[in-house]
Length: 253
Ligand SMILES: Nc1ncnc2c1ncn2[C@@H]1O[C@H](COP(=O)(O)OP(=O)(O)OP(=O)(O)O)[C@@H](O)[C@H]1O
Ligand SMILES: [Mg+2]
Image (cartoon, helix red, strand yellow):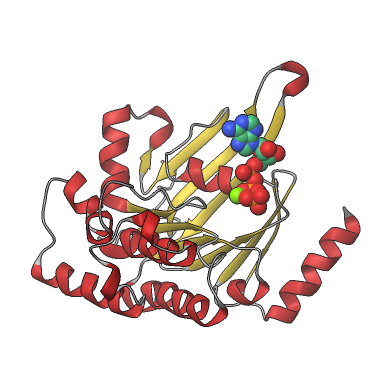
């Protein structure tokens, strides 16, 4: 018997993953033979130059995009062979996602956006979940924006709504694509502490794309991508160590 994803201590995994876009001379290889797992309960940062395949990898791991070849597991379920409906249900129950572009629903107010994952799952937050949502809203400073629409909020505030929405159901696994990209440094640190505590205190697994060495220094593990491949997989590192690795990567490129 092959070991399952959970036997390996992982929450998501890809094997020999390749993703190409376009045809013939326009063909772009976004991911080239990537085999990697996200470890249960860990806070993983994903770094690498623009265009190195970070968003593509997260979208495929979350079942939002399909690979050109290779296999993908979300928990112990291989999603590469799953139908759309089953995949949607699995994703809804297990995964939270903070997109680079936020993806808020413009016609819903902020509270409506935050509780949308519950609505889509056909249920209301329990008392405990309601208390957690209140805590998220307070620590993200959104209390006085709950009845506003997304277009009435700044980019940083919209980003915080996307974070509250992703963490609300306490999913096993949260993918966050540059969650601190639009935030000032104080709010950014709050978001990073929130993500770190989601993994430390609640055992959630977090995979976060970032360009910021300070943000990555909050992580238990840092993966570096370059040209669609994982070129480095390291443990906790200081911002200085991360910066010097990034500089070395640019020098080799
Ligand atoms: N829908 C698409 N059609 C064609 N090419 C795409 C598409 N999405 C991504 N690509 C290409 O795949 C490569 C990887 O893109 P990806 O968005 O994963 O990079 P990234 O590491 O997230 O970059 P950034 O840091 O700028 O967000 C890039 O060369 C990009 O142009
Ligand atoms: Mg990206």
